[in-house]
Length: 311
Image (tube, rainbow, N blue to C red; front, side, top):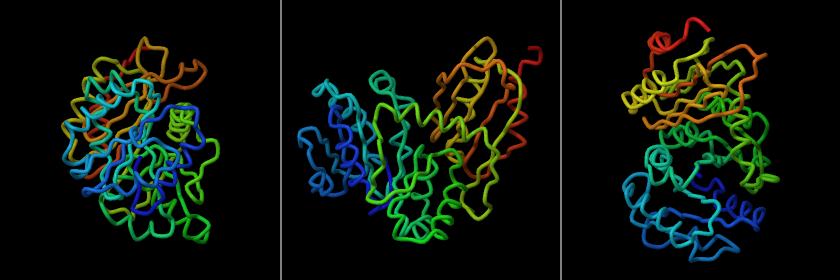
């Protein structure tokens, strides 16, 4: 979970805990400095279940400790069903997400449901010029526009336009007091995947006003050679990890009845199975790229070598 300073992350966590009292939840609060303030603000929660990493931002300096801390948390609290990680408001969430893609121990223990970003609607248009804030939007699966009653509809429209320029597939609900009705943890992942697939299939026209990053979508028909494509995808994502921040897509593999969901964050990749391919739907592969200095033509040309011509 991420979001700008003062966007309402702690309030959102409190709402989440109240709505899911029957669920055993582990919570990691990330704070700068020696004293945690946010942990004291979490209501109806046992302090022993809160793991605080106070020696700096975990997404920057504590990768190994982060992985070991999660494993230790599960070992000591084996009853935990879900884990919430709250980053600081100035954090790039990428290095928090990456271990769940490439750390074998974490992949064995956890399934990443998604990244939620809280947005302060009152101050968003000032904050969004920062690279960390832009990365928070890019890497999130749900972007909650909070404090919306405090601004007019023109401002909300401007916020949505900026968000869409950085992330065209995330759910973007509006709220006040960080309250989302019926946000139950067990439903989060299916909802995110369904919405992700639905949004990917819609045409999208990116705004040109976001100078730091740009986004484009590649669409093509046919079936892909699964092994060769995945091998290329991992290599390509790793090679371009410094200039391609997010890849998301739906692909169709030869001799596989399931839709492939491919994702990459900071060079680490994930390939999972989605829903069963509908034989009545046209075979369409969709890949979204977000980053800097990306050649759409070059990527399209590389992907062509993995298409099965006779199917």
